[in-house]
Every structure is written in structure tokens, then in C-alpha cells.
Image (tube, rainbow, N blue to C red):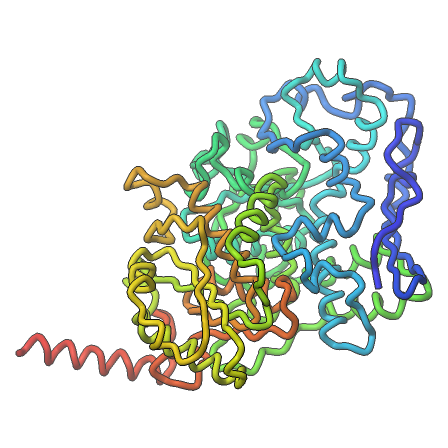
Length: 560
């Protein structure tokens, strides 16, 4: 079992980075085991001859202007993120529930396959954190040792999460206007996977004052002054670029971007460029070569087990390299079973501390005091524009039939009260809920809804503010509150034509909620054919037959 211990706290009296390294320790029955994170030799010493606050930074970087990160509440908070000596804090950065298996380092066993897989997932998550933060370690330590408040006032526009990272190479990716689930699962995650494979730190840049057109566009999912991912989420890395670097960066051609995923490298004359920019389309991409090997290398290089937990972590590291078998299911979607994909999802969607606290407050306010996750059923309903193009959609009555079927399959005790967590962006669904006849559901139940649902009626970010009553940040809060509420459920049914529902299942299936042995199923997996909705891209015989029957029915209706 793994928890934390550190023999050193931050102090201006220490000269070497190794004095600040976290030690990861586990406790089980009072016996402690340790896993240390170690730095390579080139990071062990910071020269005390360079005693100026910003003496490790170039004049061009200090002179800026830079594409700075959103600062944290204090310098100590920033340093704690970069040099965390508290492993639970690293896991707490995720959107996962406090009582979830993912955040419980005591949940480890070499005899339990699910526990080993979970340990491997945690290592993947930590590897992404190290990969994205390691280039700032030496510089951050130097600043921590040598900077005074007066020094920081000389360069007031260098934030506490802004570091030059002069040794690093970067992959800059702008985010587009697709739905939140698609952007996260298909753009952000694929960018992180590519960055790991080609050994480049990934930056997500929008609303920049310089650079190619795509990075100058605001991210439609954000409405704070930055208009980028950091309105809501933690910076993906403490490293920042100057506007000049972004302006001079090579923009990968489509063929170069595809080659990056196919070959696991950037070839040709720009292979050694410090900065390259690419657009990553919101669609599945092949996992690039070297990805899993590089994740394993980080785990082996920086995470050192002792004798007690050595066997566990060695096996967990090996699992990172193993391609997960496809789950036995009627329906498979991109990233369904991949711990590498899921580790990147967990890392990408770390809310900023103030929003993490707000999410917890809203969820606690929404759930009743006697809430029992063991008797909860999650029903996220994606309606509105999803039904127009990408998916068939069930009626509200059909959804009620689905939850009755699921509940009866798993519960026979008539004295149990089911708590049904219903979330949606579709106002029509909430109107139907208000009209429901309680006796139509043949067991004791109650509905819980998201008190912060803004019912924006669309998943497309560009449509959020057309009515003038809701901002993108409000929609983001509503969406992530719905996500965290749904993580509270033991049984969940979602429409896997929706990337947002797939995002929910990424978290649920990897132990991010408080329930043990969760049951998460797509509508497409249900036994009853009438509830297996077809996605627009599903070319299965069943869906093609449904389309032909629907077309024939429409033709007959037209002729009447």
C-alpha cells in the first residue's frame, strides 16, 4: 500500500534538488513501505554561483512577451504542484471522489488483477505529470532558493507557474469547437499521447496574441479573460513560451502530423526545432510508437520501489506495456479499455483548486444526507442537438423503461429505495421529469438532479451564448458538476454515441467514483434491441437495417 512520507520540506538552505524529492510511502497495518522519486544526475545540483533570482533565464524570455500560465494562489502552491512531496495531493488533483479507489493508495495487491491495473493507471498518470513538469524542476528549485519578494517585483509578469524550461522541446496544440467530451478524449488526450511518444512537452494554446491563426482563436468552451483551457483546468505544464517563439514555430503539415502518430517522431528538417505547432483533429488517432515504452521508462527512472512493494510496482510497470484486450461488449468505442488513454484523461481534466472545491460543494449540496452509492443509478441523458445528427435518441418514457430494467436486474429487495441521478443539457427532459407519474416506476425511488444544470440545449460551444443568458464558463461548471454527480453512481447507463458519456465511463470504469464494483453500460450494450440506439457512424447490420426500415417508413408517410 502506498501513501506518503518526506524527510525534507522546502527550505532556502538546501543546495540540491535531491533534497526536495518526494518520497512515496505506503502503510498497511502500521508497517511503512517507500517508493521514492529520484532525479537524473544532471538535476541533482543547482549552482549557487548563479545566485540571481532569474539568472537561469534568458534575456529574451524575461523580456517577453510570453504566453503565461494562469497562476496559482501562492508561490508555495505552485512549488507544491511542481515538486509535490505528497502523493495523495497529486491524486487529489483529479476530479475523482475523495473515497474513490483511484485515490486510495492502500488499494494495492499483487493478488488482485483489478488492483494491479489500478496501480498501473496511477503510474501512467504520474508519468504524464513528471513528463510535463520535469523540465521546470531545476529552474523552479533555483527560483525557490534565490528569489525574494523584491526580486519577483522586478519581473511582475512572470507568474508563479511560468518557467522557461530551456532544455525542453514543445508540441503546441490549439483546441477547437467540438463538444467537451470530443475535445478532451480526441484532441487533448491524443496530444498528450503524441507528446509522450515524441518526447515533447505539450502546450494547449488559444487566444494568443501571436502565432498561427489557430492559436489566436479563443477556445469556445471558456469565457474567462484567458479564453483557454486554463479558465477551468490546471496548466498542463509550468513551461511557457515567448510570443516570438510561437510566431517562429513550424506548423506541421497534415502529412507531418499523421507521420508523427504513425512513426512516433517528427522527421525531416524540423525534428530538432524547440517548438512545433499542430492541429489535432477530433477523431481517433492510432497510438504512436514508443508511447508505452516511454511511459515505462519514466516509471522505472523516477519511481524506485523498495523490497516490500518492488514486486507490485514492477508488475504494474509491466502492465503499462501490455495492450489491453478488447472488452467483451456489443459496442466498443475509442479508448474503451486503455489505461494509457485513461491516465491521460485523468491528467488532462485536473480542475483548478478553486473549481475543485466548488464542484465538491455543489455535489454535496445536491446529494441528500442519507445518500447511499450502493443503491444509486446514474442516468445522464444527452439530448438536444445530439439527436439531430450523431445519434438516435430515446423518448423519456423509454429511458424510464431502461432504468426499471437495469434496477430489476441488479436489485430484488423491494424495501430498497433507488436514488436516480438524472443530469441533462436538454430542457425538455427536465419538463418531462416534472410530469412523471411516480407509479410508472414500480419500485421505491427518488430523483436527484444537478442544481447547477444550465440546460444550454447544445454540446456545441459556439452555440452556448447565442441566447445571451449563459456563459461558456457556466456551461463548463454545469457539465463537470454533472460528471462528478454521475461518478457517485454504482449503476450507470449512457449513450456511447456521446463522447461526454464515454468520458464519464473512462472515469467510472477506472475507480474514480466512491462505489465498488460499478456497473457502467452503454445503451448500445443493452439486451433489449429497441433501446440500443445507433450512432450515425455505426455501420453494423443491425443499424443499417434500422436505417433502411426508417427510410422506408418515411417514404410511405410521404406518399400518404
